[in-house]
Image (cartoon, rainbow, N blue to C red; front, side):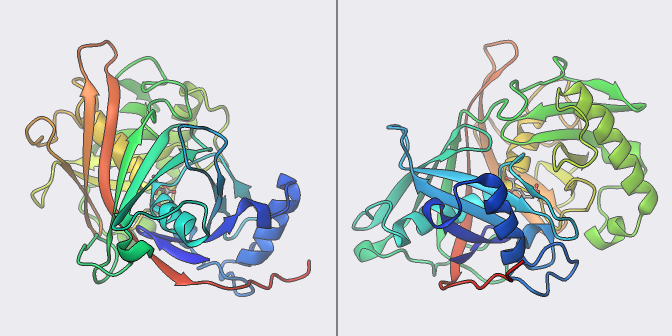
Length: 349
Ligand code: NQM
């Protein structure tokens, strides 16, 4: 099934429909998407990392979850399939897909699906409308980066802290100097290097296209994330999709902070879901880059994370009575839509 999940688009598969051997599975998915090829002309991929994604879903063996979700990032120009990161946008389609495929029985009005996230660990609960036992995709919720409106999918995350790196602050410090730049390295579901936009010579108000045209900036971001990746215990991240880098600036549009994100060096048109959750967490930590320039709403209120195509509102609950603080949960709203359901015909080899 082809679905839009938040501001991403991908192919959703039942795990049982794919080869069990990961190498065989990945080779098949490259052919399904049409990679490697900048246009993905011979496959169903959308020629951009945000539209070259795969969700693999199955019933969960964990009594605390309904389904297991493995996210796979399929390279566009490169013949790579990576499970190194999670994706909270594609996650928005997982609950509806699980109901569509009969993995979860729908409620009469609304359905909650508990999703075990295999890439990062942690549990997400997705809640969405299923009037009469059928997933409703139409609705009046607008999210930045997607034209029109659709039915809301409420996402609630638990246990995402240190998902990939093992700790919320993987370097052990709330602030480090890396490559001559002050950064906060954080992982609340996505490893992210947070730095001030002005320290990399930008205002934080540039369009994604303007940033994409700046080769010098891309080189600085790459050198920063390679050095930070080592400090975060991620090894050599030269060719890895994480850590992401988010450059923060004071908010300009009524939100809590302005952001420009690189995935990992290509500018994001908006911001990833768990990326935004992680940046929002940094804003709450005294001493972290971003904390001082953010305009924080009252405790518990959603923080508007501004990005090139609008803003993403994220609620993060921290237990600040502990050192370092613990993350209780985070919450946000997405939408998802079923776009196409059918059979894909990958090239033979
Ligand atoms: O951070 C892009 C996206 C993402 C990931 C990326 C995401 C997340 O916008 O949870 O959603 O960071 O590569 O879909």
